[in-house]
Image (cartoon, rainbow, N blue to C red):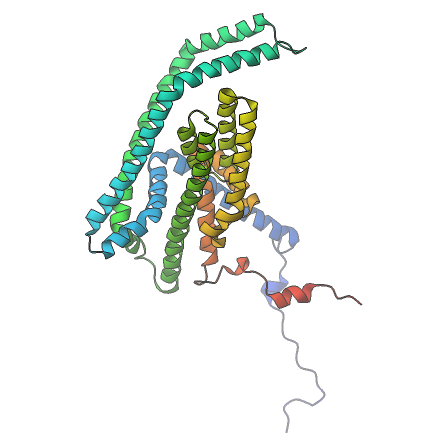
Length: 386
C-alpha cells in the first residue's frame, strides 16, 4: 500500500520567503551600489592609513628601511652565529662593516670631487658661455638685456628672505634626517639581533591556519626583500663598474662620483638608469665635448642592455620580476605619496605584496583569485574550427 498515488506529482517546495522578497539592493544596480560603497570604504581607509603614516614618517620610514636592510644582512649575521659567535657580537660586526663601507665610499667621493671641482667648474663656465654665444645667433634668441635681467633676478632671489627661509627649511630637514638615521641604526640593530624572537612575539595572537599563513607571509617578506636588495645591489655594482671603466678610459672628470651615483640610482628601476646616463653624458659634454658625450651614451646603453637581458634574470630570478607597467605605476604612486623615498620603496614593497599573494593559501599555492587557469580550461575556452 502506497501513501501517495503512483501518478501524482510531488508537492512543490515552497519558495524561500527571503529570496522571494525583492529589495532595492537585490537587483543589478543595488549590487553595483553595494560594491561602490565597499570600494569607497576601502579607499577612505587606505587614505587614512597613508595620512597617518605621513604624520609619523620619522618613525615609519626608518622602520621600513631597517626591515629592508635587516632582510639583506640577516644571512651574514646567521652565518656568523652558526660559526659560534654570540648574537650581539655578530650584529655589531655586521653594522660596523656596513658603516666602514659606506664611510669609505663617502670619503672617496669627497676626495674626487675636491680634486676635480676647480677644473670642472672652469669648463662648465666656458661651456655655458659658448652655449649663450650660440643661442644669441638664433633668430629667436634672447637679447643681452634679457639675459642680464634673468641673472639679476636670480641674484635677487639668492639674497631674498624667501631663499633664507628655504635655507632654514633645509636645516630642519637635515635635523630630521639625522634623527631618522639614528633611529634607523637602532632599529636595525635590534632586528638583526632579535628579529626571529620579535616576530614570534607578534604572532602570539594567531592560531592554527592563521598562524601558518602569518608564518608564510613573514618568511616570504624577508625572502623577497633580501633577494631584491642583494640582487639589485649586485646588478648596480656591475653597472657602476662598467660605466666607471668607460669613464676612466675616456678621462671624464668625476668618474668615481658618477659611478657611485650610477650604483645608487640603479635602485630606482627604469628611471634611475636613464637619469644616471643623462648626468654622465652631461659631464662628458661639458668636459670633453659632444663626441665623448655620445660615446658615454653608447656605453650606458650597452651596460643597461647587459643588465636587462642577462644580469637581472640571473641574479634576481623570475620570482621577483614584475611587469614594466606594474613597475611604472608603482614608481608613480610611490613618488606621489612619499617623494624620493617613496620612489625607492615602491618597487620592493610591490614585490613583497605580490610575493605574499603567491603564498596566501600555501607554500606554493597563491590566493584563489590569483591562480593561473588550468591548461585544459584554457584549451576548452578556445573556439573550435570546422
